[in-house]
Length: 137
Image 1 (cartoon, rainbow, N blue to C red):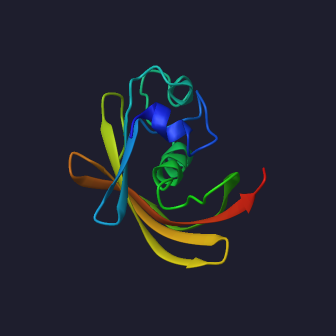
Image 2: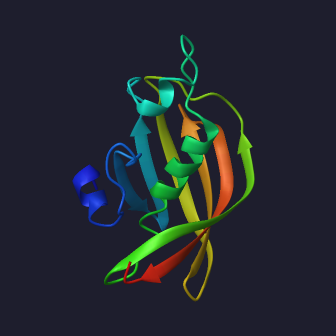
């Protein structure tokens, strides 16, 4: 899926759409984003030494989970929790980060997902995410 296909699932739009492509591979959602260097979040983080903020990496993980957290009809996924988030290395301009996201469990409208982000095959961020999928919003 490219960005236009992703927009059919996620309510996010530029500048907050933070994945370029997504696909399912053996039951795992895989999302990718290439850091261009001109993103809004790099302007002040940090001048002369741009580094993708951790909170943005968490949002990228969440958006990469989009193929796991989807319902038929008019539904919106809401982030409701982050657990055990670890930042292992910096993500810099020109890096392509690949997120692998797997469903741990689903209880009613709640989804629990484990995600890890990799740059060049090396883990840079990981965590457990939870979402509530709400109808009609």
